Every structure is written in structure tokens, then in C-alpha cells.
Image (cartoon, rainbow, N blue to C red; front, side, top):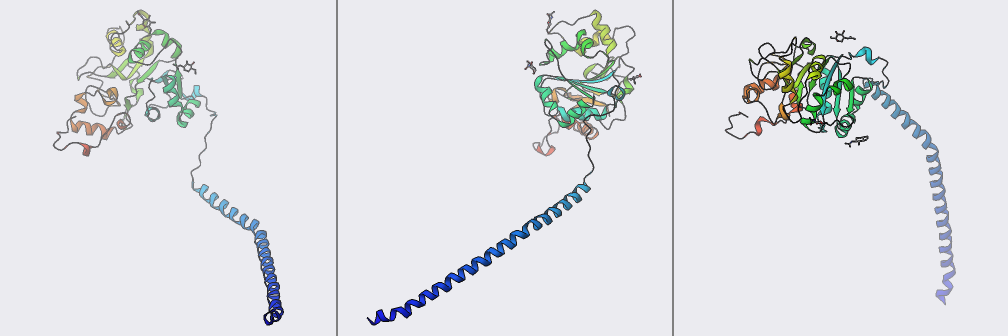
Length: 334
Ligand SMILES: *[C@@H]1O[C@H](CO)[C@@H](O)[C@H](O)[C@H]1NC(C)=O
Ligand SMILES: *[C@@H]1O[C@H](CO)[C@@H](O)[C@H](O)[C@H]1NC(C)=O
Ligand SMILES: *[C@@H]1O[C@H](CO)[C@@H](O)[C@H](O)[C@H]1NC(C)=O
């Protein structure tokens, strides 16, 4: 009973406590709401100032970049810019990864009025045309990317020999061309050379000599040819399928052609090095991408170093390894 009597005052206390607690919760809630609302009302201007700051930083950063403007529709007429009678030709059916850098490098060392033609398979043309730089050169009229229609094929060396010894190919695809630089995926011209390709235009055929006193510097892997002379030969001679390579076949005929001027090993010591070493040529043909190299040019470590120091671009087309990868006691001959 006493306990029951004492309950009301005790009981009222929890009640008033409860009311106070409720009030406090409400006040806290109200303040929180107020704060949230105040904060929320500030956010847009906060956002804006962050945006302004970012824009400022961006503008500052952009200011430091060199201006780059790509004109996808060059106004310069390719007929004026390039000389239709000069073409550098690369035929390659395999989508080799170095084709793009090699083509771009060659464009930078061959005189600027030369146009370039790349003839390949669907696969190799696709791989070359994926690059932004080659797309630009193609749009600019500097580079032609071609998949020949059937029955032409460029899948094997023999296919290419047949193509290059067929008069129809020159009439249909190189009709305006008089000078053709023929290079392969394992040929390179050296930026350090003091000579220009145009120095050789008076030859009907100039390539790499096979020996020091070769009467005909005719190796065709990196060679300059005069198309009117090539067509003259094809006008009365045809190559049998599956016989000698096209450069040897042309060589036998062009050296006896009245009036034709061919480079000889003795006088032509600059254009291209393949079998016979000489100093500072305009370019190299590293046969079969370095798999089938001539001893005279590559075996001696001193000559090898001289070649690579003079023409570092060779690294683009040849497999390389570091000197320190060699075995101990190696005589450094390849
Ligand atoms: C093209 O180049 C050849 C050889 O350098 C030159 O004789 C000829 O005049 C040039 N053609 C044009 C249209 O510039
Ligand atoms: C190459 O592509 C063309 C057109 O896309 C196609 O007609 C042709 O059959 C293709 N050739 C090969 C060998 O895949
Ligand atoms: C040589 O091969 C081509 C196909 O590339 C063929 O059209 C031609 O008839 C062949 N020539 C001879 C003499 O067999």
C-alpha cells in the first residue's frame, strides 16, 4: 500500500521527464533540420565556386599545351603538292607491327614531293590504316593504301615477282609513274645520309651491288627503277612462273638493253647496302628481316656497330638484342 501511495509523485516524475525528453528531441531535430536546410542552400554556390576553380585550372593547363590543329580537309591540292611521276612502293601481305612506323619514317626521309603506295592484303592494309597518322597521310594524298583486285595476289614472294613482271600492273596501277622507289618491309633509309633519292633519277635501275666490283648494282630490296624502261622490257619479254626473282630477271635484261643506264658496284657506293659493306649508304636492306644477313655487312662487330651508330633506324626493322645478353667468351661475331 505504501508503495502504491508513493507511486503517483514518483509516477509523475517520469512523465515530466518524458515530456522534457520529447521537447529536447524536437529541438535537436529542428536545429538539425535548420542546419541541413542552411547547408543545402549553400551547396549550389559552393558547387559553383568549385566549378569556377576547375575551369580556371583547366584553362591554365590548356594554355601550356602546344596548339594542335588537325585539318581533315587540307586545302592544298595533292596534284600540286606531290609529283605524280615519283612513287615509293611497298608491297607487303603480312600485317607486320612495324609497317606504320617504317612508312612514316620513310616519308620523312624520301624527298617531300614523292607519293607513297602501300599494296597489301585485306589484313595488312587494315593494320596500316588503323593508325591516325596513316589515315591523315592517306587523306592528304601522300599515301595510297591498296588491296589489288583479283586475280592479283601478294601472299608470297612469287606472287610479288609475278606482279612486278606484269605489264598490266604498271599500266593499271602506276600509269603516271616514271620513277619508282621499291622498298620492302625489311628495307630502311637512314636520316643521317647526306644524299637524296633525287640524286639517282638519271639511272634506269639502281640498287645494292652483290660484290665490290659488281657491274650491276641490282639487288631490288631497296632500289630505284625507271618505269618507262621496265615497261620497255615487259613489252617484248615475259617471265616464266616459278623461276628467278624479279630483280635478277630484270637485271639480265636491263644490262643488255641499248641506252639503259644501270648503277654498277664500283661507281654506286651509296644507295643501298645488302651483301657488300660500304660506309654510310642511303639505306639498307636487312634481308628477311635480319634472318638472312650478309656476313660482309653484319658479322664483324666493328662494322655492325658502325652500321647501327650511323643508321639507328635499323632497329625498327631488325630483331635486336643487347650486347650484355651474349654468353661469356663469345667472340662477338654473329
Ligand atoms: C617531277 O619531277 C621530275 C624530276 O625531278 C621533274 O623533272 C618534273 O618537272 C616534276 N614534275 C612536276 C609537275 O613538278
Ligand atoms: C577483302 O575484302 C573485300 C571487301 O571487303 C572482299 O570482297 C574480299 O573477298 C576480301 N578478300 C579476302 C581475301 O578476304
Ligand atoms: C603464271 O601464273 C599466273 C597466275 O598468277 C597465270 O595466270 C599464268 O597463266 C601463269 N603463266 C604460265 C605460263 O603458266
